[in-house]
View 1 (cartoon, rainbow, N blue to C red):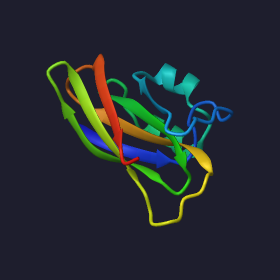
View 2 (cartoon, helix red, strand yellow):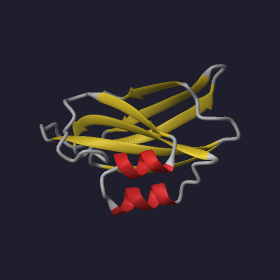
View 3 (cartoon, helix red, strand yellow):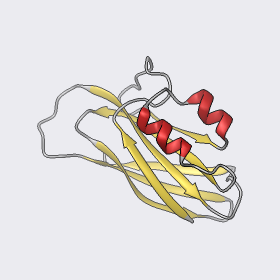
View 4 (tube, rainbow, N blue to C red):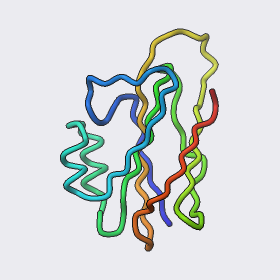
Length: 127
């Protein structure tokens, strides 16, 4: 299994939606048509999607609402008996707390010889 990531401090889907504090979500993009219809028109996201061979890969989008200076980072991804397990953490710089809620998106391209998993367990640590 190979994994590549793209991190953005924004919602990569509908830009009008802002996640609530600590609201977590993940979305599986398994084909080119879904990517074209679901992703917002953002140059970095379009390039990441265009570089994806959906015959061999899929994109898992992990999103979270949190302070703007925090970042989402992929810690681990592993195959389990029934699917995959993804561990993401929040990188918190040493900046005083303030309320500037932003939606953060971590796109994870997973290339694997196995088909798209039906069971995906995503955990976000670091609150």
